[in-house]
Image (cartoon, rainbow, N blue to C red; front, side):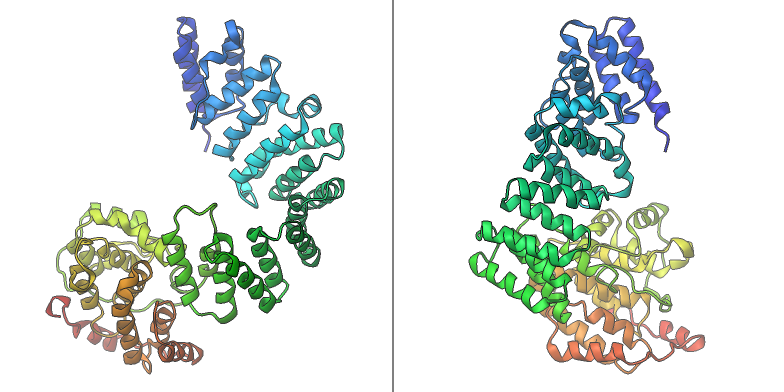
Length: 518
């Protein structure tokens, strides 16, 4: 989307304010213009007029915690104009960290070779390390080009300062995020040789991993452990690398060693649950990880293990592929309102990160009354086929957010969802069952109630045409007993019986019992 028109509107306001001698409003409009188009020449022309003010205009762009990116960038450019680019560089990098898809650094003073030679190499390294923590590994594709000027700064700094270990290591971390894998390995190797250290070996191990050179990555990470046997985060790295080499038993032993030292160390807990799930496919490991995440919201940094394990798995990460079940009906005759439909479509989608993530995403449906959610289930034809995105699932998840003050066993949300399970398997009964499963993920106290419901539904359908559809759901349910899990797994391995169609399907809908009778 072209944001230059918005930038030019802000520039017009800034220009008018400057003509009136109102420098403070002008500065605000310029900072806003930078946020829309950071390299627009007209913006920098007006900044140069502010730079001619007493004090270089720096007093107009005061930096405090959580300052907007546009203000950070404006001050950075004014510092560069004042001959202090080494002070401006970390501010500009902070703006890039806030909004990395914008071309904040695409200006001449950043890529000038003199900057890399002028700035103290440790200062460059710290700036790059902070930027790396903000942009992810690897960096999203749309951010790679805007971030490349910072890699140019590192190149110039390396050329000027030689074998500075921290500069080379931090540069390697940025290079691998931007897809420059060979450069990442080269710089990390030089840094580790220049000053052997735990951090140097970690940088080298990560670079080798990005290059697909797993044995060398493993060797570097083992050397890192030797430098500091108490850093349990490196144990997690070693375990993950061993797993990628197919040495899963060894990987699990490394997690066990670390957990013996600290059973609650977040990196190791995440890695251990992920590898245990990889070893035996038991969803209990992922449920345990979800419980850990819920109980430890202040982890040292974000982890993606749960989402990675759930991705592309039926019901753990989204709707199952293949032909859908019959539409089904809910016992409500009212039509849903346009507002209810809009709110449902706002959250609906065929994928989610994991069951707790699906539950959380449905929170907005607390503004849709339960009868309207049921009406949406009763009238799926109100939504275009290409926009349905599992609307039944999201309507049922929405029901979970009503009456949350009621104890689960006596709650109306439980009663409604159990009632929707009546009858043969269709999209409504399937959605209601998934909502119950998702709730079992987020409320451990409800698991003992929900697991028998899932087991009973699986037993009822085990020899029917929808057996696989229920079995896939059952394998995602917490606290399911082993015989039921084995039945579900065996059901999935058996070829599915073709689903009934036509009049037989219609008879199933007609024979369903209203939930309010339960």
